[in-house]
Amino acid sequence: MKRFAGKVALITGGGGALGRASALRFAEEGARVVIADVDLERAEAVADEIDGAAIAFRADVTQAADCEAMVAAAQNAFGRLDVLFANAGVGGESAEFVELPIDEWDRVMDVNLRGMVLSCKAAAPALIDAGGGSIVLMGSSTGGWDTILGSGPYMTSKEAAKALARNLALELARFRIRVNAVCPGIIETPLSFRQAAGDPAAWQRFFDRFAERIPLRRVGQPADVAATVAFLASDDARHITGASLLIDGGQTLQSWSNAPDSPYPSG
Ligand SMILES: NC(=O)c1ccc[n+]([C@@H]2O[C@H](COP(=O)([O-])OP(=O)(O)OC[C@H]3O[C@@H](n4cnc5c(N)ncnc54)[C@H](O)[C@@H]3O)[C@@H](O)[C@H]2O)c1
Image (tube, rainbow, N blue to C red; front, side, top):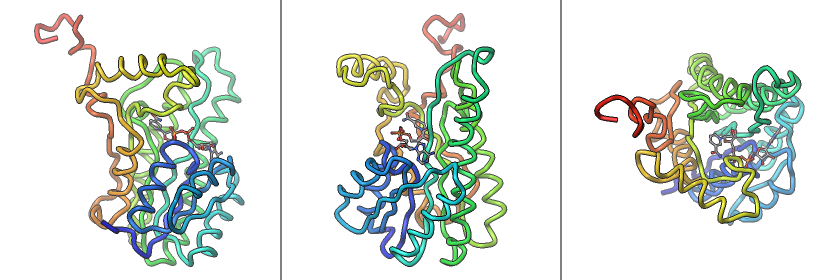
């Protein structure tokens, strides 16, 4: 299926695990793709994998000038912009709220939220020029529905993605621009388990334990996220805007009430 034939998609954080999977999916479906990342080498590695039109571009989404430059690069290379996937993000250091340096709070919010806003601000005029388009924001199930101890700024930034999707959906509807958020649960990527870098056995144990507790009994894969992003960005989702879609295999349906040690009779 070539849902993006003739279209141009820009992905921030495109050199990372979920950015890469989405770039490959957009390209497979006929899009020309701009892979923007603060780490140019990672972006170039993804662009090299794409058998079609793709460029890598160095952009730090916390910098307005970089965001404007990445959009200009898309227009210069391919003549238009139809899709923005605002995906760049950092996990942040895990620390108890009372111990967390405010600089770390600011750093995470800067990349995850302000970077998303700057990307949208830069892309919106280009999407308007193209006669409409689609923006997909990267949220998280753990920010939007759940929470994790020691990850205050990450959780807050990801919850904000849902609010931003609703607000921009309303603001930009008159330009025929749809805005939605994707909210993945745990996905099998290094961001989910940095500690296991270079330890395949620990990696396997970690994700196996998660799979046991997820109702669908599997851990999400980058391709699961990419498929949802492509759906929301495509005309198949032409009547969907302001939505936040969980991609979590039911992970957030699990609650203490249903845990094996719950006092409820059905637990
Ligand atoms: N992996 C998961 O389980 C999971 C679950 C829910 C949400 N997410 C979100 O998905 C997004 C991608 O996650 P991932 O697993 O691919 O992580 P990743 O670390 O593999 O990719 C993130 C990419 O963003 C880039 N980046 C970081 N700061 C940037 C900046 N200032 N400007 C531009 N690029 C920058 C990094 O260089 C990296 O290539 C993140 O926003 C993350 O919070 C991930």
